[in-house]
Length: 84
Image 1: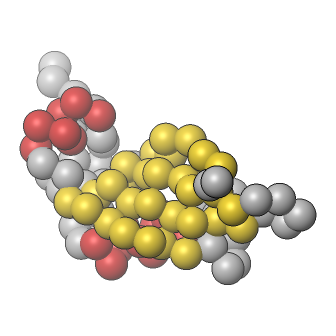
Image 2: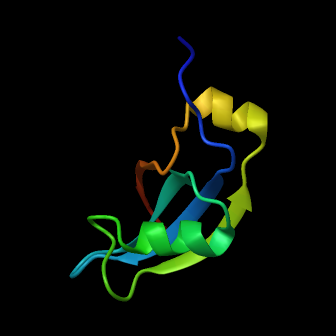
């Protein structure tokens, strides 16, 4: 049986500020119907804290959703990178 994938998804970038360290960015693939819903889901994700900020959200294509194998209602992080 084929895996059920999200109908819509977003790539979301969050700028974080770790206490006592340099700022960083985190990227998320988020299965939600709108950018607003995707941003709200990311801001509730463990590790995202008060003061962290969504800097952009870009809608994923159906090809990208298949490539990521993004499931309905999923919020998946793609790591954290320090900003220089």
